[in-house]
Image (cartoon, rainbow, N blue to C red):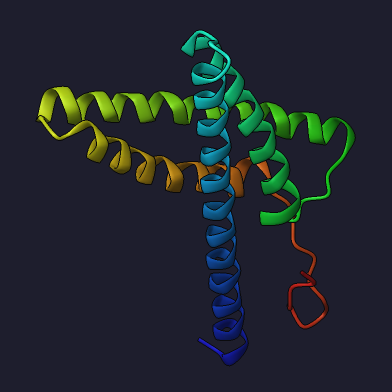
Length: 153
């Protein structure tokens, strides 16, 4: 392997690690937003917890999409392409929620792990799963390179 390929490989790993860290920050912030809205509407405003949950999920998903699009993945697509991204993101979010629920149910009810540990493990799996799909499918773009093969990002 020549030096150029080694350097490009290292830069790509650094970019992915940086994106993963940003993705985790956005995800943690979105989870906090979701929980704060859920808790506040239910506890302080006497909303039915199902409605509170839907409100928290929706607002945190909007935050999650915008933050990941513009900060984590620095994606500038607009118009129809952006609408396709929203649809893809919704598919990733909803399928991630289903995967999360299945893992939690399985680990808690079938394996006998405490529900808090099940939640933690499920969210860990879904975080990496959704990062992969959002990076390589939802926010995928072609990185322009110069004549030396170096990324312009």
